[in-house]
Amino acid sequence: MNTEMNKLLEKQLLWRYATKRFDPSRAISTEDWNTLEESLRLAPSSFGLQPWKFVVVTDKTTREALRPHSWNQPQIVEASHLIVLAAQKSVGPSDVDSFIDYISEVRGVPTSALSDYSGMMKGFLDALASNGTCEAWATHQVYLALGMLLSTASMLGIDTCPLEGIDATKYNELLNLPEQGYSAKVACALGYRSPNDQSSAFKKVRYSRAKIFQSV
Ligand SMILES: Cc1cc2nc3c(=O)[nH]c(=O)nc-3n(C[C@H](O)[C@H](O)[C@H](O)COP(=O)(O)O)c2cc1C
Image (cartoon, rainbow, N blue to C red):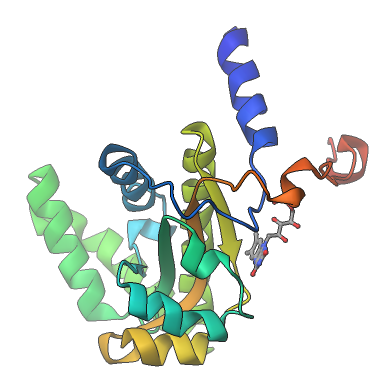
């Protein structure tokens, strides 16, 4: 039993809400930002393939340029940090080979010992490519990373707003993502809530446990 920890986690999960207005005068510290980036880097992904790119938009002019392509949402410019989560559009055999080489280097195992794993991944990705679902698969991984980011931020007492209200085509253009083989999927604004954000007082609207859980 770790009751104190459970209480703290639940308190922070309840504290988190999709922040509409951030306090532009408050910045996330370098130390906290580093931990937030680690939550993305350490996120799990299918086979561990990490088919993503996380674009930290620090340039003010770029953030201003993104705002009209984000339903004009103020979080884009008011939050301390803005990050765009992008999915790799196509993942193929060469990505698997690089990944296998990297596992071999990190874990000190010969690539020959990983050949079954390699074959399995290549077969899986080949099937995705044949039915045109590779980008959708990569997008699932990106959303999972977003979840890690949101949870970590809440534990650190940092506010967030996940932002799906973005024009991905415009984001791709402004951030030069397609040239690199990626496509923007979702963004996240991070920082500290403004004392004037009325939505911070809204009661959480969540279905009951009975409705959403099934016990078998
Ligand atoms: C993937 C995703 C995309 C979202 N996009 C937006 C958005 O563009 N703008 C916004 O204000 N809120 C956005 N939200 C926030 C949701 O509306 C919010 O999480 C939901 O209403 C539940 O409220 P709560 O997070 O405050 O508890 C998004 C949430 C998720 C998970």
